[in-house]
Image (cartoon, rainbow over the protein chains, first blue to last red):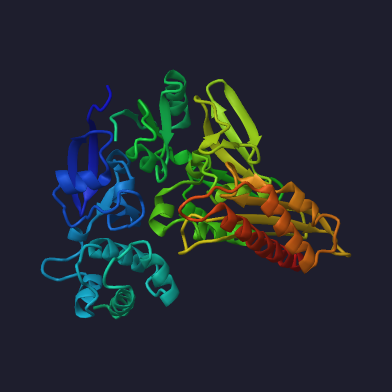
Length: 161
Length: 290
């Protein structure tokens, strides 16, 4: 039947969720509304801004451009899944320490983008950082400090901190 | 977005009967990177959505020196971009993918979905056209193979029957002394090209005369446009800068570019001249190296 909810099994930040969702629900809807993971932002809904970025099976994707049911059986990491207790992920810590945050709206998406980059490529060149980070738009702080923060995080992660 | 009924077949054999049963009312979604935007804007409201993203058997790439390259329709843009096979034998495809949208989109979006979306601004279509690629389509009633050239029919319309799905993209091994290049005009890397140009040039070994040329421009008509008159400016010539300029000018006349917020028709015509010349120049240099 049209619109009939379907079963969705999803591992999010290490925890397995089983729920029923409408076929038209976006991954973004389910993360925010059903799982209350509001660190995942909702921006343009047009695949333009990238603030909704989460990590799915190790790759950065836009949660507003994927049907929730397409993520069935997959593993999702959101900004809520990065810190270990009180200890921020090196990318988060670098953003804080380096003053790379202003209004903060794009930061969760941006941090996820940076994490996906560093997991795949632990020693990116500045050009590679720029190319990855342009997948998330920022309206206020500009990009320089954020690019530098990713480089600082990369160094810390190399140093095993 | 309007409600729809959702199916997620895991194999081609499961998908085809659904397409046959809901003929015309069903829409295939692969990565959905273009389609979900249309659905949210209300431009597309299918009754049934057949989600083929989970058909893992269509996510593959093989290369054979005789048979050429075969890409499963559900291979992601990012996989193609990063593939050592592609980087070695079809560098232009990797270059094209690097400029296609953002990493997130390339991580989830598929080559087959892009082609079937039929956007005249798309990048893979023109590059695959100059590479003389073919597409394998399948339905319950059988299989057919069509040329990429001719697959696009109009804006967002392709030669795909309601009960058919794209299975595989087949790219022949280019002849020796062939160079291929793709260039597009972007405000920011990853933007849809305001215009784009893909060019393939084959030189005759020994005397360096152009034996064959293919030029396709994007966002310059309602479909990826093969600029055949422009090709004739190059074929049979020992190509120099004047020929490249002429090819750009002729391609610009052949095109019927749209006017929109990204660029006026006049601007696009000027840029077609520039980008055809630029891509042709690069293709020529590459043909000489081979």
